[in-house]
Image (tube, rainbow, N blue to C red):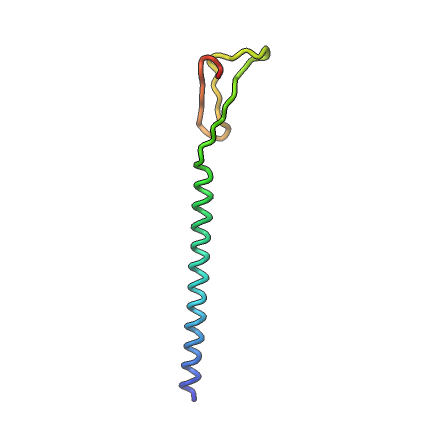
Length: 80
């Protein structure tokens, strides 16, 4: 009788362990997917267009535009 109870306990522990491993795998897959999405989201190029002008609306030659928080700069001689 004690052997059967011990065997049943081992089976229950094994089932609990299998469930725990499944939960850990699902959590790891979710976190990996989230991290990949988050990092890829910042890599999508965005095209920004515009015209640099003075107070009179005339193009500023030699103007340099810097994207805030980056080192990306663009400059042209005709302000475009």
